[in-house]
Amino acid sequence: MSDKYKDISVKQICDVIDMLHPCMDDYVYVYDLQNDYYYISPSAAQRFALPASEFNDVVKNHELFVHPDDIAELKKDLDMITQGKKEFHNLQYRWLSKDKKPIWINCRGFVVSDNGKALYMIGCINEIGTRQMADNISGLLGLSSLKAYFEENFYMMNSGYILRLGIDDFKPINERLGIEYGDMLLKKTADNIANCLYPDQRLYRAMADEFLVIDFANRNVEEALEQYVNIRYSIDKLVEKSRYEAVFTISGGILTSDAYRGCTFSDVMKFSEFALSEAKRGGKNRCWIFNYPAYEKFLKSRRMIQLLRKAVNNDFEGFEAYLQPLFSADTGELYGAESLMRFHTEEFGTVSPNVFIPLLEETCLIIPVGKWMLHKSLELCTEIHKVNPDFKISINISYIQVLKSNIISEILTAVSDYNIIPSTVIIELTESGVLTPDSRVAKLRSRMKEQHISLALDDFGTGYSNFHYFNDLKPDIIKIDRSFTIKAIENDYEFNLLQLMINMAHKMKLRVCVEGVETQQELERIKQLKPDYCQGYYFGRPCPFDEFMNLFVIDKTG
Ligand code: C2E
Ligand code: CA
Ligand code: CA
Image (cartoon, rainbow, N blue to C red; front, side, top):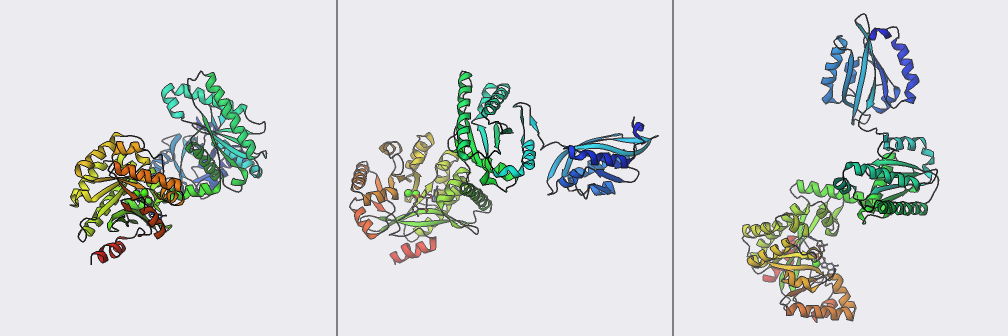
């Protein structure tokens, strides 16, 4: 079959490739088997780690840009072709991009021969993975088309905006009503969005359930917001028309051109993804406008999570348990200490737990780190017990640990392993954590009671303080948050309120610890409320173990 083309020379084919390549996304090549010479569309040399768009020593040079794991298979196929055992080459394997990233390609080619002698192979290479140009479900162009549009219109990126739209909770719709229904819904959503476009705007489908409105026509952020509201309204109408078979909403992330001027296409996509995810995180069915400080904060917290993960994998290097003293309000004697976590990093110095605890919770890393803190705190407590056997250690436990780990048995095992008298251990749970009644919290509570481990309700006064918790949870101690303490000191009404609360707690046989006492004056005022314990910078800041021993334990006992 291939003898038909034997009179066409390799040189002529190279000329045709040169003519065609600006019109193609794929790459055409010719492999001259007689002269061991290879020529490919010049655009391939820009995209892949090819030595140039033409080279000799073909098989050897392929090693430069073919994924190392795929070379053997490719060589086998090329051997068969050069030996005349095969006429058609059809292989899916990976090339390396200029920055050495693997890219899946499909390479096909056929051999032109003259009387059984293989002259050359001609064929075409296309990228399989990344280049989805259009989407037949929504009828819209895809991301690679958008990228091309951006590159062509780079000079226009100075004006207008990008509005990324995402259907909220699309997955459950697909699961409940089937993929076909989901596809139909996507199509209708795309049509509805398209109806809300201004004539000079473009609409692309970004991924499964996300769409991008591109405005290069100098519209401003108010107009973007107005457009989002129109789209949301039209989606509401769509849901109504479908008789609420699938009830869904749409969120939007706006990126104005002044925020992405001079950025790469991939950055622009990242920014708009971030804007949309913030809209969803804020409660969905809403719009969020991109701004750099928020994005930088987001990047910083991603970086912090990396560092936290690394520290966990590295035997908790960087974590430390600080101790802050608790004093008995009437005798002024040391009652115990709250154990507070610290995270030291080279990059950010010592990071506040208010920053990293939420990240540990978000990633569930609080489970291993909280367990480490539990052990560390008990270990420090055994040291202090050698000098002061009545000393109490108060350990913070996150609600995530209660819900997602076997915290009850971890506490009981640890207390018994360290041979600590259980009544010297206090577990602090935050008020927000116990807002929703949960059987695990109740179980934790009853097992602790059996073992005489105390429970403190932390952060009291910050949330929806409710005396029901006292009854449901039956804590031993209530810790009044500093924000409430300050209000009580500054304001008579709050002072009386706190007084009432403390009296009521005492009636219920609960003890009260007032947190955040910073000065002598504050202490005098707080003392009038007759709490059981006080904690605050006035008595001592959280500090490392050795310092704590020197300041509060050793000197005091002589
Ligand atoms: P928290 O449990 O309410 O801890 C008391 C916080 O108040 C501590 O902040 C402490 O340093 C601070 N504080 C104490 N006295 C004063 C004062 O007089 N004035 C002021 N302005 N602040 C005072 P820190 O150590 O930054 O911890 C913040 C929060 O991080 C803690 O609040 C707690 O919710 C969380 N946390 C700390 N360590 C752990 C831990 O090991 N596990 C869990 N789950 N959470 C922890
Ligand atoms: Ca606490
Ligand atoms: Ca507290």
